[in-house]
Length: 195
Image 1: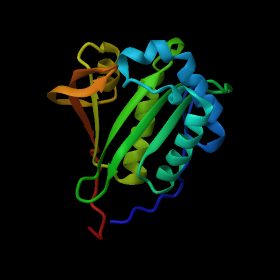
Image 2: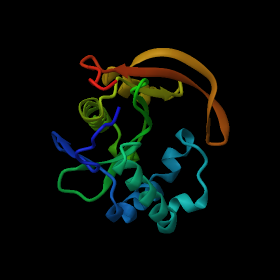
Image 3: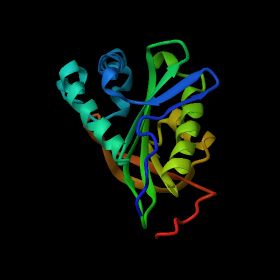
Image 4: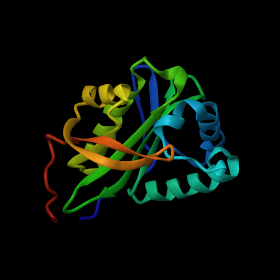
């Protein structure tokens, strides 16, 4: 099945949030986000090389992300409060597969000063629906470490259902971590005629 991507750089909004796909002009913003939140995010993310926190490292990475978005293979969404230029969080969709799987993985992070405001729940609902409507995804999969109660609450609020438990699933902060596996199923999914 061929999916025609109408806009590889969607810009969405809900309440006081703007959620849009990363573009080349966002390099300095995303570097600042990860530099400011480096300590806060460390327990929840893979170990990052020093280049991950530099302009040069992200310049190359953003170019790759833009190309993946152009082809509908991955999306890297940035979350902003309206009328601000500071990234409050990110949502990434990767491993996007079409027929016969029609599924992808989602991951996310939120700035320390954006916690507890419902930003991720609202942004995740918005981007999930965009993927369902525009990429005809049937399943969006997410996982979280059992001790990450905030992530668990976000996924439950967004309608994700628990599907299993994976031992030593991801290498997080230099240590293999167990994860709870969840998914969100598109209730309105319809097969394309050409499948």
